Image (cartoon, rainbow, N blue to C red; front, side, top):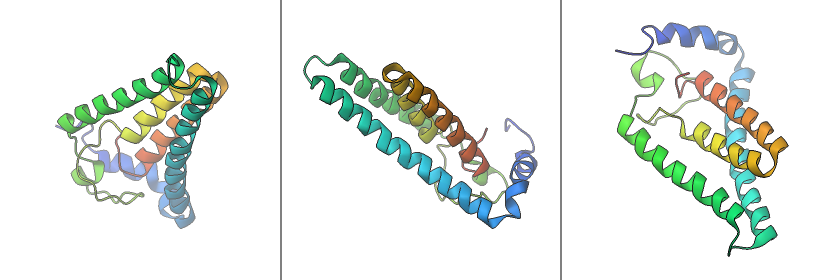
Amino acid sequence: MPLEPHYDRTYARLTRPFRTRPWAIRGLFLLNGGLVILMYIAYPLLLWQLWQQGGLAGNTALQKAFWIPALSFLVLTVVRTRINRPRPYESWPIRPLIPRNKQGESMPSRHVFSSTVIAMVYLYVHPLLGILFLLVSLLSALVRVLGGVHYP
């Protein structure tokens, strides 16, 4: 039994403002990619900064900033594979705004999870940037739901 009995209607309602505006769909697609790239750049930069400040040996901030996200990512990947929830476009007659061909593993979103973990590391090292990256994670979650690749 799905969590929401008529998700196709909910998704149609959520995406109605985009459907008549091709530029908005393109913007959503670009925003999704841009947010992913932002985090792919931000995280190595933070690790590099921490390495510059204290090298590898005995640098607990660098070790935490590397190992906690790495292990969290691995645990999430295992959990997500076990849950293996179908994606909205697999279970419902919807046309996602962000086209994907991937099957299953829709919950939880690895992109949003990774972004949030990275934001938490930033929150520890640079609190203001951490808050900004938490907002980026929230925006990423919204984009992926509107894109039709994940459930709310």
